Image 1 (cartoon, rainbow, N blue to C red):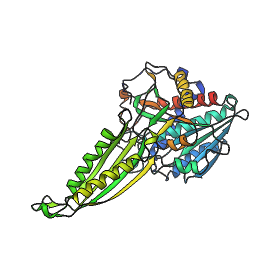
Image 2: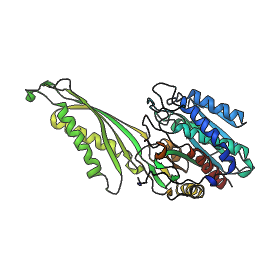
Image 3: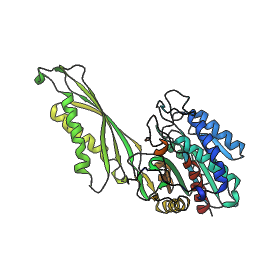
Image 4: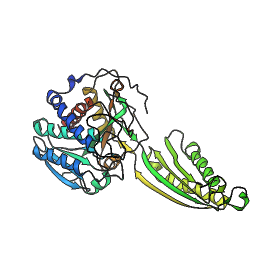
Length: 403
């Protein structure tokens, strides 16, 4: 990921048209109302009800109950033409909020700690603006309010439910408020933006015994430790050094007493990579390593490996559309960050596998206001000035694509 200073940047909002600037207080109010009532994946009932109420109030045609709690709004322009989709995720995280703010979460153990409340507010603001200015674009805009991005994933079931058809979507765009970039920047690039996400759980079955008599045992901790070390060689010695990949073991549980050799050890971890051609490779290689080490020690194993999200791959033409629009909207000393990447994952990837599109980062950190905590942190929050910037970028993308 490109290193970008989080120092406060002078932000010129004069490029945001006046009707969208006038929406800013409403955007903030919507975002804060959503922030107070966070809901986990596929349980976004209050959120969906709020979105539907607003769309109904504005006379915007929409469907509810897609992939359980998803919503798709359809807005027609001045005449038939191209079809562009805009995606916003709605779910929160199982985190106890630690922010001392008036709009703090009212749901114990749940928090909008990744900015999805802002995504919904931006999408609502875009829907309202476009419905009031249909003369500015031709064709159709479909705004997709998606459940469960944080898990187990709502994009794939929405695609399978046909949200990209009737009418057929030609391209899709989406944004992520991003506290790794300062307010007044946009991170956009063609090609891989975010990584594939795969996970594994492995149980090693050895033979327990007394710590003073190891020759009578098959030490599952020794076997597991060798597996952890060997897994690091996959990226170091099996993956092209010009490619980026990560294999991380995040859990290692074994043993019940200091003088007992454990008969069982449990490992779990995550795999990340950008190149779609690596799909399937890590599952095979990890199994080979686990099987080989277990066999050499006389242990056995059970390995579960699953694929969550493919990499987020942006279409070059749609990425250029977003980049050109962002350059017009945001003029700061940094502006557009062209090679921004992260090994984080996103199920926006399923939409981008189905149609060309672009996912991008909208800088939202402002350390001068103590708004720079990382995503998924219990004190995560962002500079709400970014909300109207997001609406402006979306509106201009619609007008440029559906001209």
